[in-house]
Length: 113
Image 1 (tube, rainbow, N blue to C red):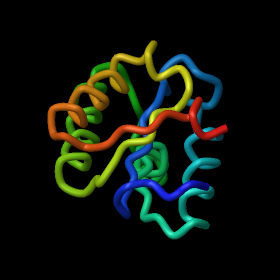
Image 2 (image 1 turned 135 degrees about the vertical axis):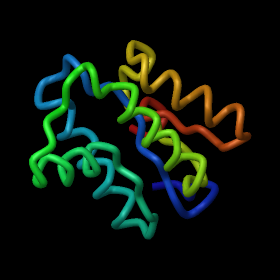
Image 3 (image 1 turned 180 degrees about the horizontal axis):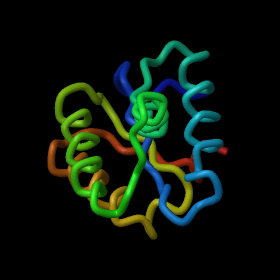
């Protein structure tokens, strides 16, 4: 993996409407980044941890979840990594726009394969 700017990556991409919420892709890339020494903020992992504590996602909770994810970007991310299909995801688009607004570098899965 080519060295990217920063140490902490936030993985963004589509979840709703995807098989198993697209968790396989999120965790695959988390592993790839971690084995190359990066710290990873994985919203799929955060959702799984909430689920272990009895939380169940619903559309009514969508904005709350996205706001928490965006707070993590503001607080801790050095750059974003956009999974394929992010363009069709409202949340991933908002995360992308936030990164651009904050001046964070953004990388795309299509460029990494």
